[in-house]
Every structure is written in C-alpha cells, then in structure tokens.
Length: 289
Image (cartoon, rainbow, N blue to C red; front, side):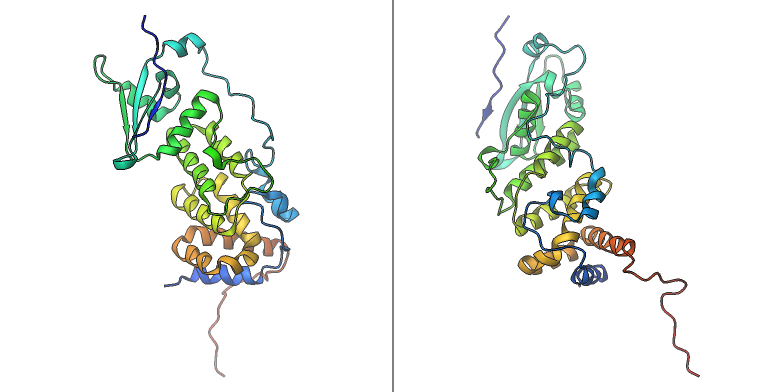
C-alpha cells in the first residue's frame, strides 16, 4: 500500500433611523467612561448591560486555556484517518488562488464539503473548487479540523498590551466565523466567537468589524450581532468623538446596525423609566377655537 501523502499548501440621504440613533446616543447617560477593551469585553459594560448579554452562548464562560478537543465522529479511529483519501481543494481565484490538500474523512464533517465529495466519480479527479472563499479563512478551517484549534498567524499575540488598531485581526476571525456558518460547523463558530471576545481593539477596528458582521451574517444570528450592537449602544457616545463621521456613515449605510443600537438604547431607557409612555395618538393636529 502506498504511503499516504502529507497534506500541504502550495503558495501559488441621511435616514430618519440614523438621526434617531445619533440623538439617542447623545442623550444616553446610562454608561460611564470606560477604557477601550474590545468589542466583546462585557466586563466593562454596565451591570445591567452585562446581565443582558449573559445569555449569549460561550461569551462569558470562555476558558483561558484551550478547550478539550471535540470528540470525533462515532467509530472514527486513527487508522481511518491514515487510510482516508487525499482531496485537492482549490481556494480563491486569480492571483489569490491556492491549492490545498486534506484527508477526505475530515472534510466529510462539513456538510457543504461532504456534498462535493459525494459527487466524485470513482475514477475521476478528487478535487473541490471554492473560488469565492477566503484563502486565509479556509486554511484556518483546515487547521481546526486537524488540531481542534486555529491561530491567525503572528497577529494572535496573547499579551495584555497587544491591540488590533487596524481591525485586521477582528476581520480575520469574522471571516472564519462566516465560513464556519456556511460549512455547517457550529463548534468552530463557538471557538471563533470566543477568540473575538479576547481581542483588544481600537474604535476604527470596531467599526470595520461591525460593518463586516452586519453585512455578512443573517439577521437571525444574534449570537454575533447582539454583542456588537450592545457595545456601540454603551460606548458610542464616547467613541464617536474619535470616529464620528465614520460611525454616522455606518449608521446610514447599514440600517440594521443603527436600528439594533437604537433599540437597545431605547429599551434600556424604558426599563429605567426615563421614557414617557405615550398612549393613543403620538401626534395630534392643533384645533383652532
């Protein structure tokens, strides 16, 4: 029997919602000034805001050490791994096109990739083409499949002072998250979400991250969207002094983001009794006597 090949990589008009958001933020006095600590740093939120986010999966209880490796599929053993066929995956296009290889048994854990494998002919090439996928994100997916963890290169530095000022690290994690969603791997999504919570970032990085999340995830994915909206609802009245124009632009161009931020602010004011409840018609025509 031939010796299995080793997997390798070849380098080859201003909206009404926006006005409401900015007005609400300007008068939102429920938060005190805090030090910048990343999108998901719920330790710096108000007690009430932290309590609101406590139900998010794997946000507050993320362990400091790598989690215990996830158990493989029932019946899987090391011999199955060694004898599994090698699949060629072509990721990206143009100058970014990269050829990767991986064991078929690991790719079968992703429903989307399993569908590709099932279409292979017995004597045909075992090749999958994914021209629209991000090369870096897909390589991290393969790293996770082999090791049950991943890193984003040299940028993932576990120090107290490291800060993602450009937003590159947050965006790389976010792209892996959306890839995991497409591939049908909720375990990888949870691991990515945990890593995002540990990133220290700048206001500009947070804006870039917020834009990506709200333009690449479905409205039903509150797991990743709600912490973003909560973060800006609590701190934007401070951060907009640094990124005011860009924040305003994001609110105009991504209505879902501005609506979610506004909803959190108004819900909190209503809960605190600072919003008068209006019964009946909210606007009445003046009658001349």
